[in-house]
Amino acid sequence: MKLGVLLCGLGRAGATRAFSSWPPHSPLTGLVSASELVGHWTAVFEERGIPEARQSSEYIVAHVLGAKTFQSLRPALRSQPLSPRQLGRIQELSSQRLQRMPVQYILREWDFRGLTLKMAPPVFIPRPETEELVTWVLEEEARRPHAGGVEGSPLILEVGCGSGAIALSLLSQLPQSRAVAVDKGEAAICLAQENAQRLQVHRRIQITPVDVTLERNWAPLLPWGPVDLLVSNPPYLSHQDMGQLAPEICSYEDLAALDGGKEGMDVIVHILALAPLLLKDSGSLFLEVDPKHPGLVGSWLQSRPGLGLRLVAVRRDFCGRPRFLHIRRSGPQRGGGTVDTSSRLQPAPVPD
Ligand SMILES: C[S@@+](CC[C@H](N)C(=O)[O-])C[C@H]1O[C@@H](n2cnc3c(N)ncnc32)[C@H](O)[C@@H]1O
Image (tube, rainbow, N blue to C red):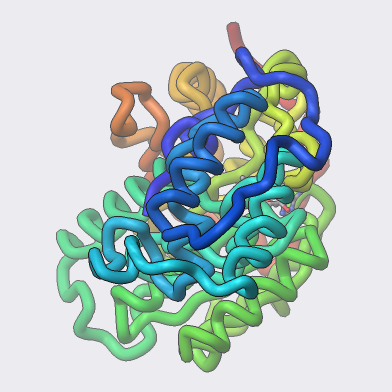
């Protein structure tokens, strides 16, 4: 399931109008089929400047009819009249869309790499680019010697787990693996735990509330010790980008999930500084970042050789933008479970 503009990159405000008010149009009368209703709501959404009008109406109608996509509905179901209850439900959900609520929150679930995850505002909605990050992590993991064969391996830590999309996908694809997932948001922790339970991987994951910029003592948070894989899609938007968010994002999603500070690097530098402590000697850090960050992160690491981290690869997303980083820990560096932030976490000196 994909909803392009809303979920690809920033989802900027662009040509959209201010919030619409209900009722938006003349009511439908008589017997109405699913196809007719999709046409009707598409026209209403277009008239009100709602982005992705057709996809939105198709998802809503399909959902009320018990399907994931409109295309997957049997032709007979698309053309037979809907019940008054179904009509009412579609109207109710469509009015939420008119208030610019993202479809993922309206449907209360969304697919990520084939897993159906529960969605709830304000927890960040997983974006399709992040599926590419997970694919890359799995490709690299498959190349590791003895990959997949060792009980409890690889050990994974996800920083900023949100709904759990990344960690839960990795666990579902790596049946021997175990994971720790942390997030500073209480709603995110609850939702990730619920998703882990629904997907029956809860025995292999520990989900804990942690603010990565404040936490000093990681030893109790890593019950299995340092990890093979540290993965994060951190908040990385700059203050300038934060000012251009679409209403779907700024009215419904937790802005702390997006706001990476002046240059978008605030949380990234904390993760980089922690990585030598959290990773095994040969461990890897995978990050999703803004296209301007690969250069900044590369320079930041070069100016701190003591961290023993090397940017080994940058991958582009499906739009061709450099968005994913693979950083490898290359030297022995251990802090005994306590992070000395005074030496490593100076205010982020972000190079030009
Ligand atoms: C961009 S969202 C990514 C969520 C999820 N990993 C995904 O890809 O769908 C960033 C997440 O990081 C969390 N976060 C932001 N700052 C954090 C911090 N200082 N410590 C821990 N988590 C943080 C947010 O609550 C949010 O859930």
